[in-house]
Image (cartoon, rainbow, N blue to C red; front, side, top):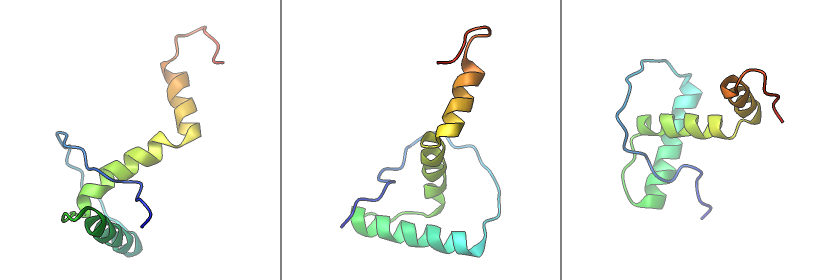
Length: 80
C-alpha cells in the first residue's frame, strides 16, 4: 500500500478554530482518516488531520515560502 503524506499527528497545544467545510471536503477528510486508520492500525479523528494537512500544504507551497522569506529578510538586503 502506498504511504499517505500525513503519517503522524503532532501533539501540540491547540488553538481552537470554528469553521465550515464543504460536504465534499468533509467526506474526503473522513475517507482519509479511515485510510490512515487502516494503515496505522489506530483510530484517527478526521478533525485531527486538518492542522497537519494545512501545515504540509503551506510547507510545500513555493510562492508562500518566497513571501515568508522576503517578509523575514533584513531591509536593504536583496533576496537571492
